[in-house]
Amino acid sequence: MHLILTLHHHQPIGQLPWTVSDAVRDCYAPLLKVLLQHPSVKVALHYSGPLLEMFCTEHPFIIDQIKVLLERGQIELLGGAWWEAILPIWSQHDQITQLQLPQERLKVLFACDPQFAWLPERVWEAELAETLLQSNYTGTFLDDNGLLNAGVLQQDLHRVHRTTEGVKVLSIDAQLRQLIPWHSVNEVVEYLFELHQKDSQSIAVFADDAEKFGSWPGTFQLIYEEHYFDDLLTALEKNEDWLQTVLPTSCNDESQKTVQIPSTSYSEMLEWSGGNWRNFLDRYQESRDMFEAVLRAPRDAKSLPYILQAQCNDAYWHGVFGGLYLPHLRQAIYGAAAKAYATSPESKMETTSSNDVILKNNSQLLGIRPKGGQLFQWLDLEKHHNWLATLRRYAESYAESESADWYARGCGIEHFLGAGATPESIATGKFPEEGDFVSENWQIETQQNEGELIAILTRQGGVWQQGNFAPLQIQKRITLSNQESETTIEYEIFNPGEQLVNLWWASEWNISPSGSDLSERSFQVENNDFDLEETHVWERISNWQMKDKWLKSTFTLSSDSDFDLWQMPFRTFSRYEGETVESIFQQATIVMHRKVLLQPGQKYFCVMKVLLR
Image 1 (tube, rainbow, N blue to C red):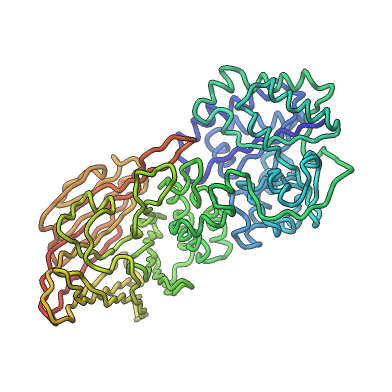
Image 2: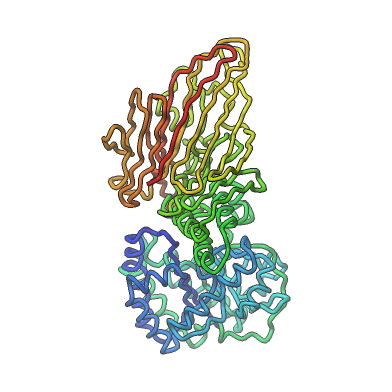
């Protein structure tokens, strides 16, 4: 029988350099070293584009070792989506471009022409078959649950299949994925021998993440110090009289069966996503916002490379790793998107299909949402940074003690607080709210005057006052000039009712620094720097700054009125590498609050200005 060993190596754009270095030390380098010691064992290897580019610039010896293995015919390199995009969610043009990039770059790096494609997260939709063929691929790997759902019988899984369009499909054996590397080498060999006894022409396929071979917690000791990988390859060599390792392109099966495979992925992904990867875009608004920001970006020869980078999948979803919950991964997506937008300097205003309003000049892009009347994106097109790459808390099964937020954490969230509200209660979302402006819809009108873009947000809502719901209207006029880095927000709070209203108005702003090393980022009030990890309280303040030394930029807000000011860290819990749950700093939450007393028919005015520099 034949065995196809396949290892997928990947690090996303924006990955922390020390994380990549650790993976090289603990996984990528020792794995290749063991392979070099077993020249008769053939293995298919996939390296994502971001990782290969990191190797070329920071770890070139890995490239050299891959070349040695290729020259002696021991390995086959797989293609796929160069920037590791979930292919079905993007246009077919982008799918083909992603798939053809590794063909071009592997030819330059290694003088090879990949025939099989590795699908990111093994997400499959039927339309991909035609796309793969148009991109000059002959085959791919899919998990056996997908073939079973297509009607393939259990006894036929260890055969080569073809889609109706003609794409060769190798079925990944779920039991082998459970055995390697978590069970003994003897158990692996016994399982393979059982398959051989049932059918000596069986083709068993093991395909999984290479990071399980040294990068995952505890695996370095198992795989290399206890010699699991070396022992596994030795066992394969000893049993070569009945078991041969082969490469995907050399695996021929005259009994290939045609099958129409429905949408699928590996079983864990189907569990995390609720059956379909696209559900992540519906469950997490922040994922949808990134996705739509990339879709809206200008498309031409200059912007396309950045658009393709921004399609890297890791930050769009959450499963066993941090993914969406890791701020540096979200910022990497927005950074690439900002570079795409920066290729087109003209000012622009648009209303999206979901009625969000986008204001863009040559230096920044603002996203404004009717729900909650808040800003949800603030792209600095010069620093390639989103000051609003924020994240709310979601209900996750592993963090039952943490409550989900009842509103999105953007900028310009207008609260009317009840007695007892504190900085901590705002940060946790457990505070008395007396108004209905935070999560309800606002009306947005737009104007484009000479030299400026304007969005006017209005909500006729109300506040609870001593048991009565009193009417209240807020209007916010957001003005972005065509050429400047300054944004003006003019507030008008109006009491249209017949009774006095005594308001505790609080405007919440959530701001994202460029990374998790908070010593390089600070909050500044009255020329003093304050730690973002701590909670601070000030009285009668009219301006503040978020300073980011690494970014060499500041986000400055000034007001023509004095406010009392709270600043506190906003953290979420995220599952990371198995059962570990960690607390992650997501953003700084800033609340400017003051008492406003309005007689019937009276208005309160306030002007805030935000400067990026």
